[in-house]
Length: 286
Image 1 (cartoon, rainbow, N blue to C red):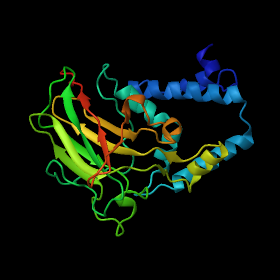
Image 2: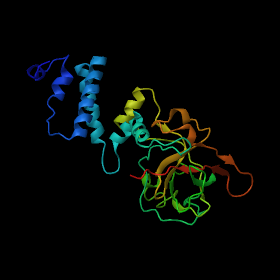
Image 3: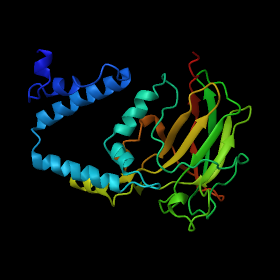
Image 4: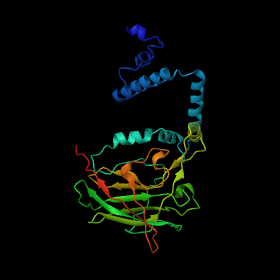
């Protein structure tokens, strides 16, 4: 195909016509990403023979998605989540050797600035009907305990809401804590047995889930961010074994290796115990 022919748009040559307009001085990575986006997007349109009415509906959907976004809510991230894109990007960028703890999505409710607490602190500030002891050991790939590991944890309350969703209702930093391991690599703290909850489904993404016959629920989980200099930071959840939504998480965050036991405890104030060990992967040194 001559350069003159490429200048004119045809159905068959649509990809070549669009990508030929990318300038020679364009950043190489941007040129690669955009040219491949055009390739796959045009292939999709041709594959489904997209109608003008359907394209109009898509434009309206994307417009309404943007209109739902503000400094407290990001509907586009929610869309990325329910399409599995967030998890795919996370998986590509956090490949680890066998035995290292796997990542999952961060989620929208992490908070910076939570104070460090003594090991064993109860992070539930509004009382708990189902108190749970979380414990385990942080090691390297050879099983050696790691000292000085920062463990940032957070979860919903027993009604399925995070503190930042209910300012003035829940205490600040409710069900949140930061702990640092000692020489034995152990961690332990008191919290609650988390509950499953729906992602926000009152916007375009929720409407899309409904049209697809999908529910908006996430299985119960505790969030962990495990970090130490010289190692990959682990951003992950531990999921409550036996939860009804494990196999149908609305954002595809569940990995088999992250399903944790939550064992009942007989007698005493704590009703549940969840043991999960973290294995950190050393960061590549360039």
